Amino acid sequence: MKEGVHVNTADLIWLNGEFVAWEDAKVHVLSHALHYGTSVFEGERAYETSRGPAIFRHHDHLQRMENSCKLYYMDLPFSKEQIREATHELIARNGFSSCYIRPLIYRGHGPMGLDPEDNPVEAMIAVWEWGAYLGEEAKRTGVRAKVSSWRRISPQSLQPHSKAGGQYLNSVLAKIESKRAGYEEAILLDEQGHVCEGSGENVFVVKDGQIATPGQTSSILDGISRKSVMEISADLGRPVVERDVARAELALADEVFLVGTAAELTPVREIDDIEIGPPGPLTREIQSVYEDALHGRSPRYEKWLDRVAVPSKA
Ligand SMILES: Cc1ncc(COP(=O)(O)O)c(C=O)c1O
Image (cartoon, protein in one colour):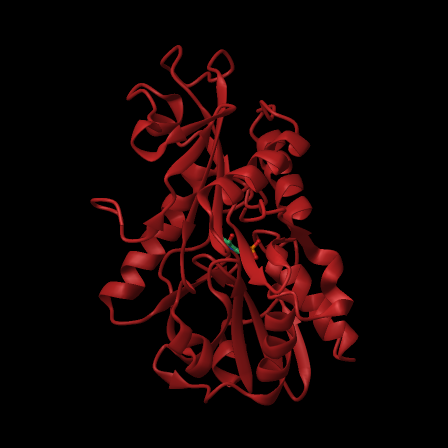
């Protein structure tokens, strides 16, 4: 493990088309993104499967990264296919069988000031070994969450649909607040006071067998885990309804769960000190199918896997 790093980070990082040593992956202190948050990124995972590592919904993540760029007037400096291939090579060269993947597109060093359009758009990909974000225990027993006093960024000020670096100050404030108050996760409301999402996850509520999640106009990030869980639920004969969700519905739900690439599917067992209860049957059923899909154990969802070719050991 490298000094100051709490995860097992790879030896190599991909930076602007080159594979460089971890300690050489540097940016200039006058990089525009460092000052003004002008970056976009993805969070993806590759899982170990019986046929080698497989990246979950890689194409969808790359498409969302391109969309995130578009919303901030940035062009991807490499094609999606080039980034895809570089990611495969990075995983193979680092010898990981499973890892978290973090591609980042950012405005680099150039003119200082708020007009970024003459600053170069640069790219990097890092991979590291990382367990479930809220913990394996949380995936089994659920987390205690708190409705944040911070509202999720509004589409009147920023682009909730973009996974842009600067926007994450909103999640950071919510996360710190919930952690300091003794909770494991924050759930943010939107500007209207409707339920929006967790600091890094989308949220689902179950009541009387009906599953609901906030829709595209509720300031959510259009989560890829969310999309997957919606498809799985529909396939299980439980189509998810996208609608406004009132704050009280969290506390009064039979089941609540969060989904995101980092946290995977994590149940919520308590909200604002009100007990929801241990993970319920629908949460368990969807979680089990989802885990099978992630780990390449489900022929039905094989379509979601981008398999990484690993060099055979001579
Ligand atoms: C704010 C926010 N909402 C939702 C999600 C879930 O998105 P995904 O399932 O694509 O990881 C994330 C994680 O990327 C996030 O950061």
